[in-house]
Each structure stands twice: as C-alpha cells, then as structure tokens.
Image (cartoon, rainbow, N blue to C red; front, side, top):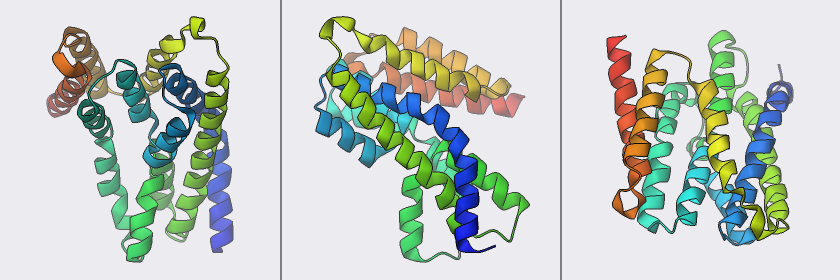
Length: 225
C-alpha cells in the first residue's frame, strides 16, 4: 500500500472514534470558560496539552484556585500512562528520523495508541508513520474543534447555570470503559475512596494523592491476580 492509502486507512478507523471525542472536548471547553479561564487561554491549553483527562483535572483545580504547582503535578500524574504507551509503541518507530520521533508523540492518545498498536502487531506491510498519523490527526482536529465549540457555548451560558457538574460526569464516562479487569477495578475503587478521604488536604493535593494511591493499588492488584 502507498503512504496515502495507509493514511486514509487510519482516517477511516479514526472517524467513528471521533464521535466519542466531540462531546468530551465540548465539555472541556464549556468547563474551562465556566471556571473563569479566558477563551484564548482555554484554547491554548487544548492545543498545547492535548490530553483530555489531565485538562479536565487542571480545569477542576483552577476552578478551586489551587496553586499552579499542584495543577501541573496533577496533570503529570494523570498522564503517567503515556510513558507506558510510549515505551510500548516506540519500537515500531525505531527507523523514523529524529525529527519524526520528536513530533509523533505529541499526537499520542489512548485511542491512537490502542488502534495503531493493534494494526502494527497484525500487519507488517503498513507504513506505521502514515497509518498512525491517519488515526491521530483526525482525533486532534476533532478535539480542537469540539473544544472551540465548547468555549463558544460556555461563553454564552449564564453564570447561574452552574455547569461544574459536567466535569465529574465526564470523568465517570471515561473511567467506566477503562475498568476492564480486576486490577483496574481495584485502582478505580481505591483511587476514588482516596480522593474522597484526601479531599481536605492543603493546596488541593487530594487528587494527586488519590491518583498515586490508585496507581499503586492497581499495580499491586496486578501482581496478586
């Protein structure tokens, strides 16, 4: 197959996935404006960070006036899984130039990782770079467009509507499909309980502590089960 054909094959796989990305991105945009983040800053966060779960965590903490160091630390903890994704998929890009190796990780998401890795394992003839880009680029475009729509909608929503509830609802929507075995179930339960117990920690460190405890519990459960 040609590079163009491989890219389009990735696009075809990605298009149905964007249906789940769009409402997620819209909620992120609405929530950002709702907590007082200027529209241009909300969009810049979307472009620079490009990580839905960590963006929502940051928005939640910013809305609670958490220290910037806590916001950044929380985002790093939430995105730790990307290190595992990178280590897993990197061997398939070992022949790429240093420039491509530096650029491709920016587009790495849960969906792009899972779809691309499945393809790479079962088809050695596909251009890995172009198939990955075919999957990842539409997801990026859908996320940014949805975020802009959410920002515009959020700017027009009256203050009395109080849309803060949307953030935890979206987190639940992301969490439930991710619970696929005993280890992830343990991580979810322990992390959730820790978040409730640590809610009163100074500097809003409860979310960071809960994430670390949940990850540790999941790793321990994986060894046991």
